[in-house]
Image: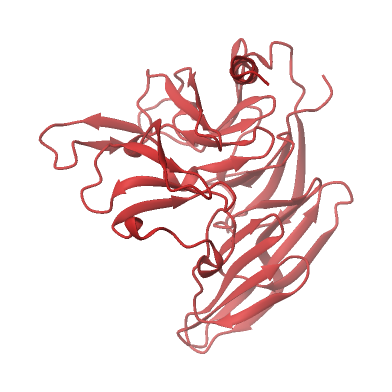
Length: 349
């Protein structure tokens, strides 16, 4: 295929972010009504099933005499509404393409275990921590070794088949251009993304786009600062926010998200357009709370699909179903109650 045609197709694909929703979008909201842990991650393990951890009906007495609810690995099927419970989890849940890793910690006994393997299937329970990669959920020592020149560099691994990003020196992290080193190559490709202008833990690979999504973080240059400036969060009001797609071949697309208070934090690139998650459920300045789920359509933001306080989220492979760990009634319900809510943005129009 000619290079000009490839670029044209990618440009047309990028327009989806702003034009995909010229017609009204009927978003279907599916409540799991299954309690989730307030810090749990959530992942899609099939087109209709998610995995997270949440409190079961069990309790355990720790070595110090305290009594706690047991949190277990939990799956919930959006079609059958079936819930299943598995091993105990306390932190660090990670899932990707069948690979799973999570931690179990007994704080009173100062002991910990790491569960890692294939899910569903064989999961090994190993005493002590195991370093695993946050994108592939594989043990770091099983990944392709990095070149010797990376030892004093800040490296961000991509999927094993795509290579890694060189973010620059570990010491004095200035706002330098990021370099892509593709799998099987020693040549670094400089890309139009700068180190201090994106939120590294939020970078994810989205199969429906075949690229990595970078949400902009505001960097304010300051020549007096030893790193050349400093970051500011959340994104300043009144300023458009850039989001970027990095393809495995090193090409980059950029789209400016219109300025809005609720677009200053979490952005998710669904197939129907960008969704913003805002957890501002109270203000001290008298402004109306802006907590909610918002969809960016061709005519602007579609305000407040639903309300609540939002933690982690996951988008299905086809880009249509957004699972969110959510507190429906922040500040009202005691004890706090978290659950998983699913938003189908590709519902019938």
